[in-house]
Amino acid sequence: MRVLLTGATGFIGAHTLRKLLEEGQTVAILLRPTSDPWRIQDLLDRVTVLYGDLTHPQALASQLKPFQPEAIVHLAWQGVVNTQRNDVSQIFENIPTSLELIRLSAEAGCKHWIGLGSQAEYGPANRILSEDMPTSPTTLYGSSKLALRYLAEGLCNFYGMRFVWLRLFSAYGPMDSPHWLIPYLILTLLKGEHPKLTKGEQLWDYIFVSDVAEAICTVLREQQARGVFNLGSGEARPLRTIIETIRDNIDPSLNLGFGEVPYRPDQVMHLQADIGRLKAIGWEPKTPLEQGLKQTVEWYRANRNRYDS
Ligand SMILES: NC(=O)c1ccc[n+]([C@@H]2O[C@H](COP(=O)([O-])OP(=O)(O)OC[C@H]3O[C@@H](n4cnc5c(N)ncnc54)[C@H](OP(=O)(O)O)[C@@H]3O)[C@@H](O)[C@H]2O)c1
Image 1: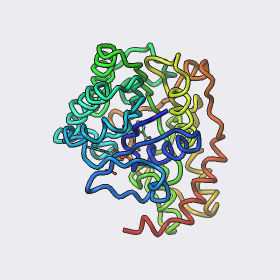
Image 2 (image 1 turned 45 degrees about the horizontal axis):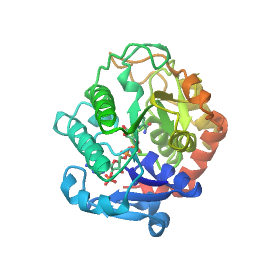
Image 3 (image 1 turned 90 degrees about the vertical axis):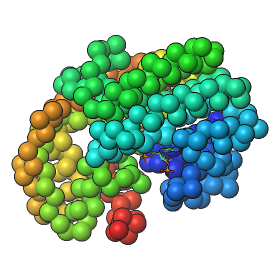
């Protein structure tokens, strides 16, 4: 299949690109003038590169048509990290740019659209979450994802495109942004520094990033897949256990600062995906948490210089 993958230079995108190419798909990606393609440098000669920014869609249109995408996997998003989740200046821009991409893709003959949503669409429910549960986001990030989920579905229906929306829970693995808890913790401990942490009583659903990429490839392949799917490991562990496992992979004697940071006022204490819908189409997570954490620590140990600045 001919697939346009947006966000290929990002954390999830880089792993997804690798998997799509392993599966023999023909892939085009976007590069902006400001993109740093370090995660996919070794793959660039195997893809078609479209140059441009989603905020200037007309410049992309003339490159999109000749590629003739059959499917769009849309991962690009401004303001993914926690510190930008309520950034009014950029978060809502994702909605018109994503809708315009659907319109341009439909005009280029595209038939399948896969978008990345988030558990943030549900808000702090503190229970196992299935796709039919009420959504009540408390961040602009969650609201904008939820708004796009409905608008994109309407537009895909209008153009006769298959619509899939994957509500991703927390992904972890090699090459992540250092702002997230797991890379922050690993990099801090590798430097021998003391991490400041909450009490760590939260129950959290972490999924290894190659399982995320595999799920994206599965919904692309399995054309009966339509609508909203939760994408998580389906298991929740106490954050404290996850943190101690990471510490033990680095140096069991290191001191952890549990309780040195208070919980946030809207702290979610239980986040867990019901993944029955994705399992029903043949996907399931393959990487046990202990194995994924070990692999992740090893990658950061070997590549820590990349994060020095
Ligand atoms: N990471 C998680 O655990 C998680 C959880 C739930 C949902 N998600 C969703 O999964 C998707 C990927 O997340 P991620 O963690 O991989 O994010 P990321 O590392 O921040 O990557 C974001 C990607 O979007 C691209 N992008 C942003 N604005 C763009 C624009 N205007 N035009 C073209 N490209 C643009 C970036 O390109 P540049 O390299 O040029 O900046 C980058 O490739 C996002 O939709 C995110 O909301 C992620």
